[in-house]
Amino acid sequence: MYHRMVCKNAILVLTDADKKEVCSITKEMIKPDASKNYIHYQKYKEPFEQYLTQMHELIHIQNYKTTETSVPPYMEDDKTLLVKPKSKSILELFSKVKKI
Image (cartoon, rainbow, N blue to C red; front, side):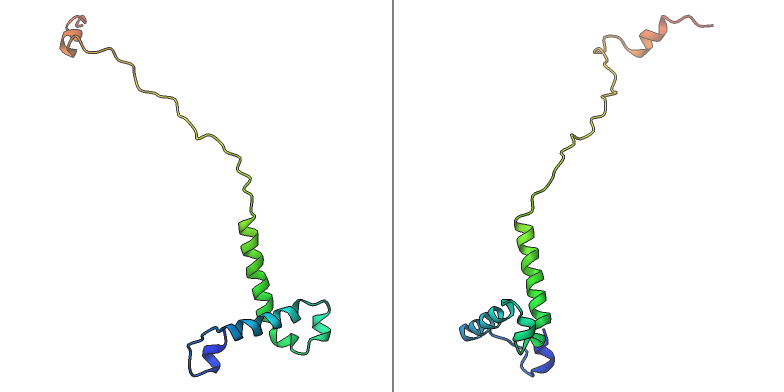
């Protein structure tokens, strides 16, 4: 987050010791009344709230149940003409029509 602005070396490697330290800070932040009792609460407040929001979003996505009201697709009536196979040509059919 702020690492690139503060440190000259922009590469950040998360080691096991770093993970343990983050876990211990998280445990302190989770405790009731941490805002009053934990000295560094204000320092870690913003990243902690972002972490909580992201975790909540992931949990919500995983447990999300869709309420699909599946509506069948609209079926348009077939408007094609039913035509018998051609036995006579059009000229033959019109030849029987009386000319005026």
